[in-house]
Image 1 (tube, helix red, strand yellow):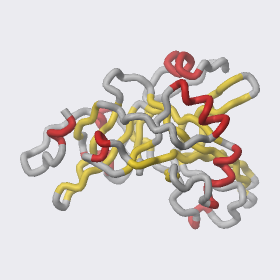
Image 2: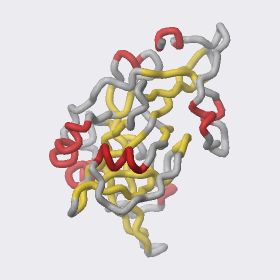
Image 3: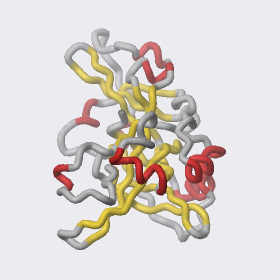
Length: 229
């Protein structure tokens, strides 16, 4: 699964990658995106792709209970997304792209969980395959737009830390994903990863650039860190 990621990029980078034509948007960096946080998402529009904010954690349009009763929906397994009722409608109708600068996964070492940060070696923007949906909150009479991130079985690089990873799309696969919803578009993971501070998983969800800085591990904590360099 992917329960934390980062969105740190410039507006010109997004315009170049997704060919955006909308007026400029103030894209503020977030170094610790958590489930239910608002995130930036790319969806198709009448004049091409455009960026808009969404809640991370998909709410099906047919959901009638409270949000407190909603199960975790920030990740959707690519193997079952087309059949699972909570994601099925969105997969048929509303597919999206989620820009990211990297994501976190945790490795269990003894009794501790050590976070690692995965990011492209060249610093480029990653694109995760996603789904989105509009949900009408009848109590507050408002519409909430929400999304989920697809995950798949990890490739060999990521498997040293975790058995799942986000579905990462190359630019040539943006169109096929948005138009056809193909789930076979997994590409190799970012080729760079390093251990980071455990602050990323502390209560209060700290959010600053030091969260993605590499930290040194003691001999008993090294685990598979040596495999990533």
